[in-house]
Length: 430
Image 1 (spheres, rainbow, N blue to C red):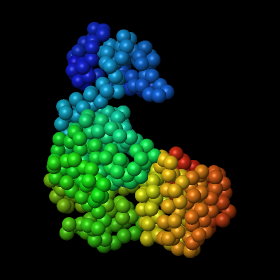
Image 2 (cartoon, rainbow, N blue to C red):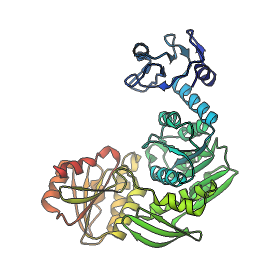
Image 3 (cartoon, rainbow, N blue to C red):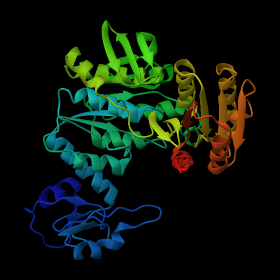
Image 4 (cartoon, rainbow, N blue to C red):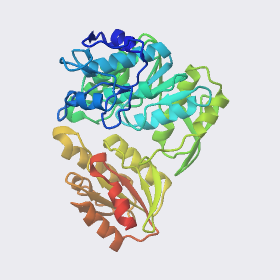
């Protein structure tokens, strides 16, 4: 962007004379700043980027935003300025924005949508799960100038956060993958979560809304455009294995290199988005088939002679039940290793117990469930139908696996990201 664009977009006050025709890149990190960049310092609970303005200029930055007098351009809030700059670029390049949120499955849905749309359009997507305000801005600025479709993942921890992202993204198509109990500790109820997720349409400029068929979504969405609801009930499953699905939807057959009903449901978001963007069924079919799961999402690895399916990217009661359903349906001779589910609020113990009771009613007697962590003992405490053991630490759990679990059994890992279950793989490999 030119300096004059920075001034126009952010509404900044010019503190020091600078060539407004200069083309610059925005940098928020002095560790990676390059000569000719323009520094935008961000603030957090434990850091203040404005303390490094001098360092940024020493490294070759041509100027800096600030809320005080030490920068080149003065604004009231640097994060708000960053959002305004992102919105300015979004509108200048005028790509089609597909915005996605949900209690679980939003990253997978983003990957499926991006894979599908890439078959026809130059598509850019949110990297990894950079789905907050800063990640949104970074995605906008990383998107190449010739991007035709931008696929944005929008995360939230509380009310108003999705609305803020929607305001600056101005989506053309919005998707809610589902409403579960993730972050219920902050929002209090599934209905409040649904209301927060439905904020995604607040600043939508397009007229297509796609969502899982859920009464809470239907009751809370305030949108006058076309609403498309989907569920696994709309699908005829033709073939399904651990890493492959073939299914019929609305008279057309699709293939997906992933197992599990929840992945098929997420694929329906991608199919409906492709249809909304005038893709042919063959284009959608081809793009969908090119999807491959990302790291820690049903990731198949081998460690220490054990075959492992690692799905430890995150966990909440809904995704845990879907995880177990898929294992029970598609596998034999397995061990399920579960960790704590985070951010479930004052009822966190009961949510873990409910999951244990659910597993006890589903799992065959020759199975084994291992729980690791403070809360997960409440899962195995409810399981009486098969071998169920609990350990406080990953080290104890790995020691049990090495001494008691035959290498002919597939290990399935799932826990909240904070549990660092990838350490199980590392330790087994050792």
